[in-house]
Image 1 (tube, rainbow, N blue to C red):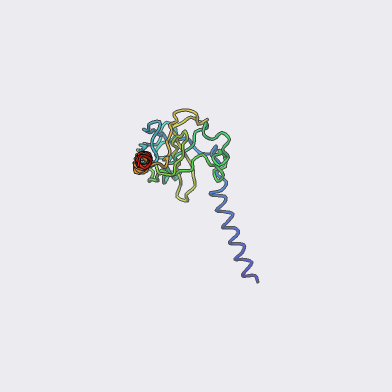
Image 2: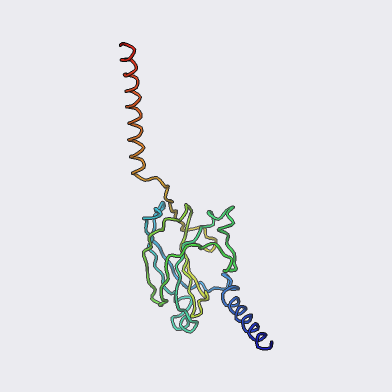
Length: 202
């Protein structure tokens, strides 16, 4: 019985530790120490459009040595909703508690951290809905905990936003088929009309 109690205690401790590391991190506690830039057009097309993202350490905030000491290990690049596209949409709601935050739902990529930064070109995936977006980069430590960030918009998420146009579901083949069907229907109608007139004459 004592053995099982110890196992239960260790399991509970592990769960609580995991929650403490990953579940209780607040966005307001993160160090804004990454400079992020992007290149994207308003109306970027889901499924084919591309977004270019570049990031690097802002050494005016933290030195490369201090970043290494703080265990800056990897970066996560995220596509995030601008404030205008979060209004009356609870499923996109911002929460300071990162475990509950829904601002940045779409992963664009992950890269190893380096003070000199890096870049990527991301093709917008097909499921991305219409909205106003910005890009955020999170820095994680060796344990995967978010410890720093940078973003292309301001703190209120209202500036430097761009839009993505969703896939409508219509394809050229559908339009062609519809056109052929319409033409066939018109020809059939004329054929029926002239056929009826000929029948009446006879």
